Image (cartoon, rainbow, N blue to C red):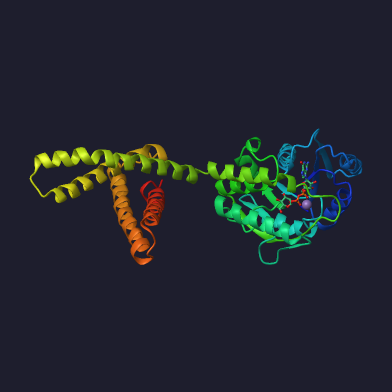
Length: 367
Ligand code: GDD
Ligand code: MN
């Protein structure tokens, strides 16, 4: 093909039965590509085989690493090597024929300077062949959880067959990738999404490996932990936690301020005690809402908005509507569903908190 420089990066660990065949198939099926095999000194001699091929074929390269450090680390090393050689698109691919070489051309075509392309098992036309039910459920479940908690907008969020543009690697720090192993795939998609790259999918038929063995099973819990770490690092999750803490503190403020306010009012005006209580309650709500506003402005959302009065008013509106939602939810749970009051309290608080958080995040403190 033309001037495009595409590099296929294949990490390998004990793939002597696959590596020569997959390299041949890639050159049969894909146009304008070079191949870099990143081998972690496989004991079965995969590296040696690649070394021999590379001597005869200038399009094949070997990056030999001294020890097994995981799939993610191998990819990072491979991508950095490719960047230093001036490649423009980078395809991640397994050695074991699970990623069909005939899907390379469409995958590369889908990838551009604003788009990460994904060879997808979970869109129309894509599927998995040769997995038992257990492995299928594991993979489907992992994908479901990842998409849910990290909000990744791709149908196949754990896919390993992808094409990244150089622009994406330039926009991130490859050395800061946290995942050493399989969670790498997820972390890369999350980073792409956060850096405003589009994710586009092309269907693939994923076939289970014929020779050699998968290394994923021993790494599942490690990868799951990393996914939860990525979740806890998400900006919106951190904001939500801060928002909840601010909410807790200001519930205390509300309680602490109420009594002195009531006593003060009682000494100032002569009204019915119930009415005085209502007024004191309303005032303590306002005090705690304003103090909430201040803490959320400074801490949770770090707002630089100049029109503080407008921002504070919006916050108060949200808080008042939140209070109505709180009461309504409590009513629905206790009177309508006839559940016990404690559930009513918990559900009503949760519903109101989510409402307050999302509207404040996307309206009051929207940048
Ligand atoms: N260099 C190196 N170092 N390569 C490794 C390592 C490692 O520590 N671990 C695995 N590999 C290589 C394998 O030799 C193979 O070429 C490729 O990475 C994928 O490994 P498999 O063990 O075959 O993975 P899998 O089939 O279980 O998982 C595939 O599907 C997952 C989604 O279901 C991969 O594509 C995953 O990335 C993907 O998430
Ligand atoms: Mn595999």
